[in-house]
Each structure stands twice: as C-alpha cells, then as structure tokens.
Amino acid sequence: MDIRIENLTKKYGGQRAVDRISFEVRTGEIVGFLGPNGAGKTTTMRMITGFIAPTEGNIYIGGKLLEDHADEIKRHIGYLPENNPLYPDMPVIDYLEYVAGLQGIPKEEVFPRIIEMIRITGLNPEKHKKIGELSKGFRQRVGLAQAMIHDPDILIMDEPTSGLDPNQIVEIRKLIRELGRHKTVILSTHILPEVEATCDRILIINRGKIVADGTSGLLRKQASGAEILRVRIEDGEPNTIFKALQKLDSTSQVGFVDGKKDRFEIQCHPGTSAAREVFRLCVEQQWMLTEMIPFETKLEDIFRKLTTN
Image 1: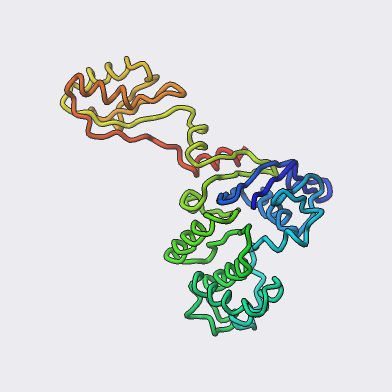
Image 2: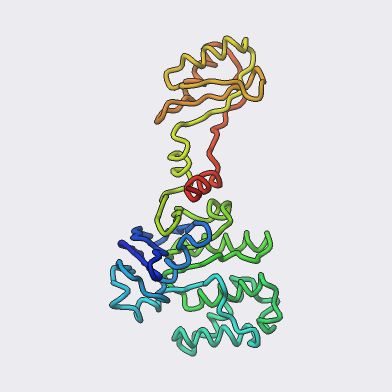
C-alpha cells in the first residue's frame, strides 16, 4: 500500500513545524526519515498515522485521501511512536491480547497472532512478566509487537531500535528488512549506519522542509560532485606515474596520499570515472596496480552539511 504526500504543512501558532513537503513511498520500500531534533520528523509521522491533522496539504494512502477515509485507512497502519504506549502493570501476553482487541482481530486469530509476534520479536523469555519489569530493550520489542500484531500493510516506526543492544539491533534490522519486502515502511532514527543497513531510500528533513531524497549512494554522489579514487601503483617511478595520471582525460587533479610515493588520490571531472583509464594505463606501462578505492563521502558528513545551515 503506497503513501503519497502533497504539500503537507503543520502550523503551531505562527511556526511551521512541517512546511509544504511532498514525497511518495511505494509498497515494498523502506524509507529512512532523518533530521535533527525539532526538524519535523515526528510531526510528519503523526500526521501520516492520523494522530494529528495537517494544517494544509493532503495525505493519500492506497490512493485514498486520509481525511475522508481515516477509520478505514488506520486499520492498515501499524505505528511505533518514540515513547511506547505501554501499560507497565500488564503482563506482556495480556497487553498484546488487549491491543489485538483494539485492532479488531477476530477472537480465534488473537492467540496465534500473539504467539507469532512473541516469536518474531524474541519476547519468549519474558512473555509472562509484567511490562514494567522488562528492560528497555524488551519494552521496545513489546512496542514493535503491538505495532505489527494486526499485520498492517504500512509500518511507521519512530526510533525502532532505541534501547536495544547490538545483537538485538541486528535482529530488528533483519526483521524490518523482511517486513519491507511486502509492506510499506517508514522509520526515523538518529543512528545513521542503521539507515544504510536497513533502508532503500533516505529522506532528510530540516526546519520542516525536505532537503534530500534518494539512496545513500545517490546522496553521496550529489554531495561530492565528482568521484575520488585512491590508488596504489608500484613498479614505476613516482613522478612519472604522477604526470601520467594527470594526463588522463577523466582526471581533474592528482595528489600523493599522506606523502607516500606509491599512493595517489585522483579527483575526476564531474560525471566521469578514471577507473578504467587508470587500469589501462597500468597495463600499458607494466605498472602494478595493487589498490583502487573509491573515496565516498560519509553519510554523517552529508547529514551535517544539509542540517546545519
């Protein structure tokens, strides 16, 4: 079930928390929603889930306008908010049974769904405890279970791995990837490596506006503007190699790396790559090409550049 956002705006008094943003998320796509605190991520997610109404703009889910079909559409959405809506005095199983009832799951399907959620979220060792007795990581798993118990077509998750240990994070990432094959998934996180490990596409929001939209590779390419290669070439005189690299059609600049005479950094002209030319040059000159590494802009650097101006 796809999501289409058109000119979405949310005002609080004279302040625009979300400012005329538009984007789409397709079925089977996992989109990472990034932005600094106060950028508008949570507000946008709350509007998509129907928790709050937009000031302006439209939200279409499965081709239907959320405003006109809210009750129907909400049945297809699972939502994990940043602060889990948990009841600490309730045992895990009782809480999941309660949520299943709220979601309208037929009685004969409730316990099979609870068992399935306990299995896929790894709650089995703690399933008989009260929620208030659980660690933060296991409480987060209960939150994930409640978001998925009705098998929604759309999952909206605000910081889904918050409080989890490294092993749990790997497990939840795997779960999200599996869910993303058949569902529409939007997740927000402050952990940038998690976005690259989990998401097909990245949206970056700053001061209520979308400032970037694309895969991590595309955002790197746009940020760097030109490919940079780091190569190690042996069996040749360093200055001769340096001058030969400068003469390549795709090369704009060449420099030595860390003062080492066999390692070179090559900056290419925008839209070109020197990789094939470097390889061909080494074959022709009988030099040994022992290393060729594309130098990528870090996602952290892109995020900082887009959200600090």
